[in-house]
Image 1: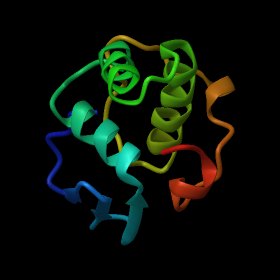
Image 2: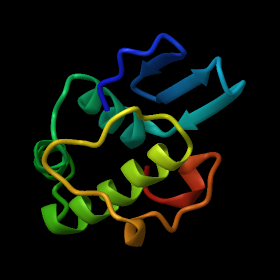
Image 3: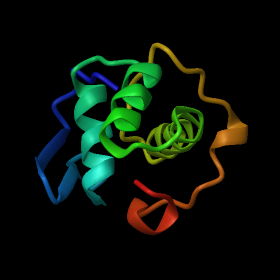
Length: 109
């Protein structure tokens, strides 16, 4: 989700993140897991790497995390918060079933 666009501004800490899209005039909030994922994507990490890192951090199964992560990325792309796809995982329409808005309620992110 590395984006060279200057229209996205992010503030992130251990409690979560807030993303301002100055073009769309929207503010998106993420919980702490969403912030962890967002920061990994900003660093250029692929979906598989982020899923493995989350599995190590949480003790959850990497397969379930990867699926949720694909849903999250698809939702972020649908909300125009990403200018590119993520290297290691292919995001398809089947993973885009989450509503727009605050992702805390839509998934574990």
